[in-house]
Amino acid sequence: MTLEVTGGGVIFAESGDATTVCIIHRGAYDDWTLPKGHIDAGETFEQCALREVFEETGYLCEIIDPVPYISERQLANGATKVTHFFAMRVTSGSFVANDECDAIDWLVIEDALKKLTFENDRRVLSALFATFRNIKTDGSDI
Image 1 (cartoon, one colour):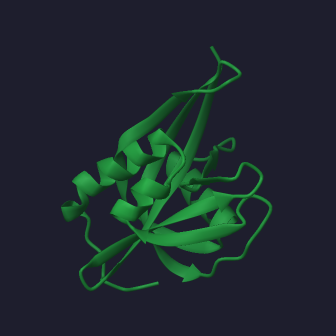
Image 2 (cartoon, one colour):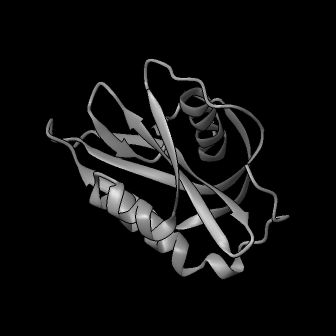
């Protein structure tokens, strides 16, 4: 069995009573997903997640907490893909369209759940939403 290990981020922001999350559009696949990618040799899951989020969105982020759900799915080639996600907030940067991601959208969690293409991404976001009260931020907005 081939195992693909990846790291990813759920980028969120709070403004007043609203919490929004950033989802990305991958033009090559025409899907809406969470930023994630393969771990490089010597990287931790956290380092991978931060790097992938930056590469795909242009945002430098800080990790707030691990998401209490590890995404696992079977790929068409028979490999198993396992992704460790982390809740993050933006510290600097701005979105720039690139080869991997041609658009982003900041949505309240309920709308993001509807727009995400993959069930596993919805599970990740639902797991974070279920424990969101435990996540502390400074209340800054994007």
